[in-house]
Length: 520
Image 1 (cartoon, helix red, strand yellow):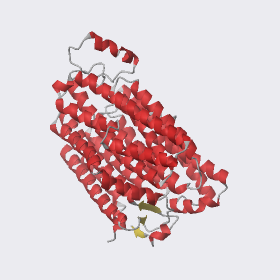
Image 2 (tube, rainbow, N blue to C red):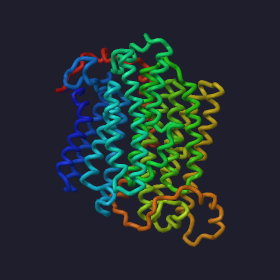
Image 3 (cartoon, helix red, strand yellow):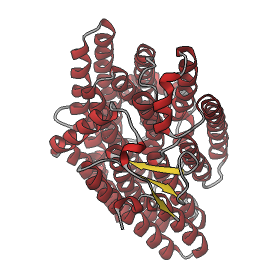
Image 4 (spheres, helix red, strand yellow):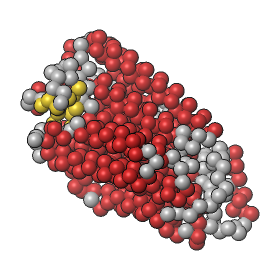
């Protein structure tokens, strides 16, 4: 069996696992076992595929043996395999966190009969998007994400979650309609939706037609990635969901949109230059997002706004459009997936221990829960870009790539990136200071200093303090260790990302991969 035959399993296994967990009904232990085994095997397959493509050519398989351009082509290169592997680890850690939460609280927040099938379908959608070799299959991956994420975001059926879910699904449907319209126009113009064939034929199209097709895809993907001004939906949608759902959404769903933009810019429309537009959008995304974070008094909303601002760094790196910049973007993308997920898990622990996620209400946590204090502090410093963490390494690499280009707009983005990093650090450290360092009996003077946050949106009402199962803490500890590992092993990982950046700027051609192998 050749390595290419393993590719369909990246999507097939989670779907089979989802069916198995649905049949298992309310047998919690069986569902948990199936979910863990499925994601573990997926991770192993992704690592094996990465080793194969890193030492040779990308791999592709035409599902069911249909010839191009009729068949569904699944395509794995270094970028696809790396993101599937990282996503598998993140999904597994969040799953363990949710298992602990469910065991302690019952099925109030994450009904087990619904959660596990939906979670695995979400995983299948993420993996499908990462390995799609044609635009329509990428669309299918997005729709799998949409269906599963709507179920997950409304778990518990509270009024706020239903309201947030409605906003989320309406925005997602608008994005899907734009994407499907773009696919139809591209197929009408080029006669194919296969990415390799699109890349080959696009140069034959008039420049104005290329620009229209380019912008259609960019707008659809920018909504998914929460790029300003299309990010308005995210800060109100993510904070209302259960802690594990919010964590996986923040870590992975926007990155699927960023991934699609990366493919669009580097391989589909390499001759259609909208880099200046992307730089302006990146600047606005960074600044508006971080200013929103500074104005918040609720931890999940702070993190949601920082999520938006740090998507701006990825768009910035992509718009520089050099090998070094693309490599730095991939490294920062991996860093952000891990660190943002870790922070949301840490906030989930704070919510259980303190009964709230409002920095106006939570206090004295350093003495009461020193372990949680550390679990929040390390990824917060990392996301803020403090040396020597991976956040600093990724940002420095982006700034260095921009400085090498040396235009005034690049230097403007560098300054904006530094300011965004400092304000991110300020917002996260202010939250740590008020929630952990401030004592229960702190003075009225301290309260007066934060009075300006009184008008900020409040947290969802939570009054009950709950015990924290060890598995929830262990899952968060594991993610913190992984985030530190991105720093410790920054050299080898960055080398991988540089190879990815170099390869992405080369034209793709499935013909060069040899004859596609069918999989029935």
